[in-house]
Image (cartoon, rainbow, N blue to C red; front, side, top):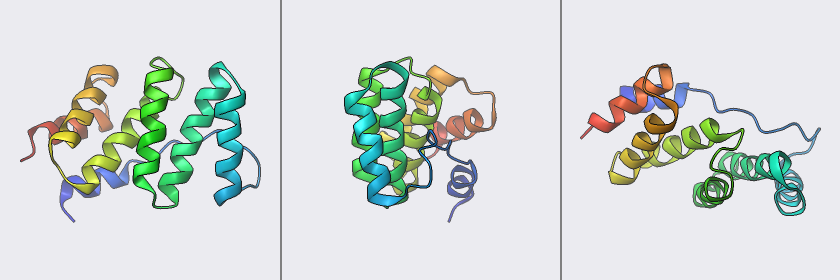
Length: 128
């Protein structure tokens, strides 16, 4: 594992909204119902929760789909920074390629390049 990969992994992901002691498929179902049945902040929290559960289950492509939907429906949602970081994490831990660098540029554009995550995103943009 490269130093860049280690640094990306070391940045914790924000936890989704608390839904009690529910895990796995049941948690996914709760977050999905939130995303579909609710509006505003509750719906955006549902999409982030869906992505978080899918990532936790090793279903990166499903997580990315939830993140993409979140970003199109809630471009200024409360979880925006966490969504952008999760996308960068998924894409860049797969491979540092154009998709990874686009995620890093998007992170910097919206969240800046100064904090720990911003500095990592800046390193990603320069990685070959």
